[in-house]
Amino acid sequence: MNNPKRVVVGLSGGVDSSVAAHLLKEQGYEVIGMFMKNWHDETVTISNECPWMEDSTDAMLVAEKLGIPFQAIDLSEEYRERIVDYMFAEYEAGRTPNPDILCNREIKFDIFLKAAQKLKADYVATGHYCQKDEILVDGKPVYRLLAGADPNKDQSYFLCQLSQEQLAKALFPIGHLQKSEVRQIAKEQDLITADKKDSQGLCFIGKVRLPDFLQQQLKPKKGRIILVPETHPAYQTVPAIADMDGEDMDTLDQICLPLHYRPEDGKVLGEHSGAHYFTVGQRKGLQVGGTGKPMFVIATDTRENVIYTGLGEDHPGLNRYGLFVPKKDIHWIREDLRLALGESARYEARIRYRQPLTRATLIMRENGLYVLFDQAQKGIASGQFVAWYKGEECIGSGVIF
Image (cartoon, rainbow, N blue to C red; front, side, top):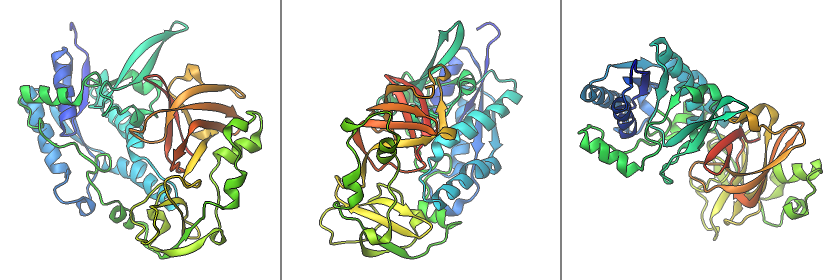
């Protein structure tokens, strides 16, 4: 490149970002490696699982090996404010947050991007398994967020809240590769991270015991576990999608809004240590035996501190055909495809990472977006993100009510 573009790579100390930095250097970019320190509290991470010191050292060694400048940046204050406080507030309200999606929107492609721009960077790059391209719409450039080429590693869902402005400045150098190819390149380049295990747990905190983490702020309190039978009257009145008239708001609400249970809707089966530690669809941690079929959480009430459960994978409280995204929580990556009031469109959608895409109808109403699935979805939880796609492209996303 004549007059090469400058890229700041978020070096996490893992193999993916290491190879991303190498590939950018090969392509002629001027590359700077930057490690984000987002967490200080070692007491809640599981010992030796992805502590930041080790990651920071690995990131520095990779930068040294590649011959690129390296610096570390402490974003722990912003991370606590924007991610950790959000998590606590969501769990306390009985909702299920996704810190990884927020971390990308609020930290990597906002605060980190601004830090990179102070270094006169043209782009930031990460080791995400996703791709982007650029098309012209009415003569103007529009960026498309596309799935990663490795179907087992596609991370486009985690980037479903990015804006056009953020995508314009983002590079995803390994998105066209398979994970095995990334490891192979790291071995060939003799990078210290070549055989390093993938990090798990919360974005940048490492592997965290979630109950321990939540207990820092959300204290345990005993409450009832209530089993709701499949014969509950509310399940009998939910209309089938096939019978639905798209204009009928009451029907849309019945299918898409979560049911509200009362303690008298079932029988007490046991005790839990805090409704805010549980999420819809959860099976582990209930510690109630002798039920025959597996028991799942179908709703939580953090105000009354009650957990509602159902037996079996096909319990009607666990499987729903629709969800609702309030107007303020709808996000379009492709602003040019935004649905106008009264419009509907067919897309494919998912409500969690690595879940297969399911055909769905999106209907825009005054109060927000109704998403109706062709197949029932298991464990739709308030606070999760739904993302909708057209083929390989992520079109938009929203927070589930």
